[in-house]
Image (cartoon, rainbow, N blue to C red; front, side, top):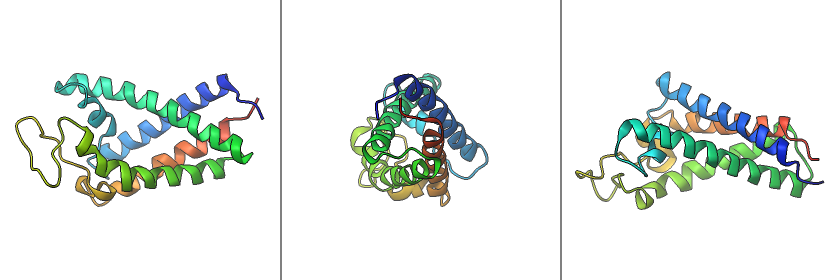
Length: 160
């Protein structure tokens, strides 16, 4: 199997757009208060409007990077199907919920931590384990979009 770069770019863009839309829908429908692009954007600027734009762009680039990782997994294991992609997406979402979210306060210049409350600069609430500080349904609002992301990549990506 050889890497199919144009298909990776296209399928990565589509899958990331689906993931971003699903996460925005879950916030808009009140399933969770988490807005990952906004959190990412506020790492670069305190301006709330610009943070949304910067965060969206960072989220899209991250999506391509993660799509490349998924494609690498597809190649190593010799399998690119929707269900296998969904399984990789489930594992990815569990990593985000259990490892990445709790690490945010340590790398985010504007996020409070569970040990240090908010300050004038650190006003964002930390997601906490499983993102539960942003609502009890946050794990679902993270897992489902990541499963969709992986399923879409597995469906669209075909090795060259």
